[in-house]
Length: 598
Image 1 (tube, one colour):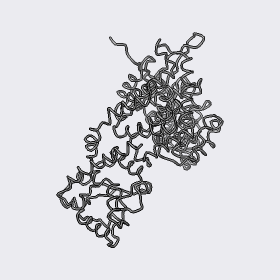
Image 2 (image 1 turned 90 degrees about the vertical axis):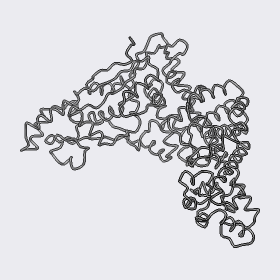
Image 3 (image 1 turned 60 degrees about the vertical axis):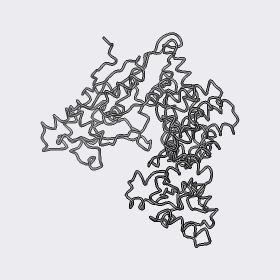
Image 4 (image 1 turned 45 degrees about the horizontal axis):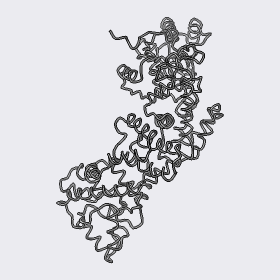
């Protein structure tokens, strides 16, 4: 018979809250914004009052760790599910402050109406109405007694039903004596098993990532300055997206502003670039993989716990060293010069807008590669070339779309062990053969999805080669992307709809070009054979109708830059499918030239 992997116990709410106050149970989310609406806190308290089930908490015991003197330290329990519920109970019952979405500490005050037996979020009106107990946290204070509260309430509200009020206030006082279920997971379970148990137990379909486990582990490790490291990761990511958040940190977390972490991230207060706004998962992954040459975050959790992979014993010295190295990796990630240099490299490859980068994993590994090659002391110009090409290759081949951790783990180990040049050549030979450019890539361009990665690489190629927008004399694709321009149809949409083609047919990416809106309006719903013949007249000293192109050479150059076959001059509806095939081949050829130029 297989040994149970967890035990189920019932605990008094006041006991669970006492454990969290003493640190016996670590709540890793306690320093992060409380995401519940205040009405949900009210509903939770109401459910507890009425004896309704509120779901199980899930705690995972940290392993016992062998200390340097040979003795063992008892591991804490880390709450991996139920943080918001416990935080809500602590806020309402104990009066604990929470951190709101602006990262400011605040109170959530829940009021109780004994006559109606109703809970509400406190308002100014309730403070003046004697029928409300305006803050139930006062009920659970050290010197609060139900008898005196009942007596005072009845004195302030003569005429109310005494028996009902007595029952209601007594029930309120007993709320902290209600029980809540806790599932205790065994310390020797691996992350994969814990994740599986979590998914099967959690009825809300919440996915718990390995980055969440790592962040929980970091926050719970006070002896290694884990709470500040956790804050550093959260704060950096928030600052990268919202530079004004700097002032909030200064105002509400003065203790953190004295740390080395804060001084190293302060440059972000003037940073407006949004091409790479990492979240905590991205930052953890890059820092860990760069520093430890491993790609699986489950390994990070084990190392931060002090696991010796050879003896399978958990040792304090390994945990201490792992925290030190992770801290170094976080500092490396934060470095202003490295971060901005990396973004510049990605932009120099033509990826100038966040929406052009659909794969965060590809971007993360490109940064890992940049930091790794920089540590190896490669020539900066060579690093730029390698990073640009690897990133473009990753996007084109969807390298990190499926099993990204395993692929990253494999790549970083090969890069650390072998000459990068020879490893990269092996990857290119296997993934970007002649057949890829002539068959696979044109087939990948057969899609109506404008967010398709290969189409974004095509646009990056146009940006990199400084191509003009369709029929534009001076406005580039770069200008159009930067200024929120849009793609339009070469074979006009209404023209194709009139000829009974559906959305998936007329919205093929091979039918799209970046085009100025005023030019698109002039094109209207004309057949290409019509408006291109008008373009011929324009290029032969006719009046300007479509953009500023005045010569046949300028027109042909513009078609070449936009990968448009010259045969379009005479095309109508009967030629549309052939046009798509021909243009896909030209787009693929353009992408190949672009890639080889990186």
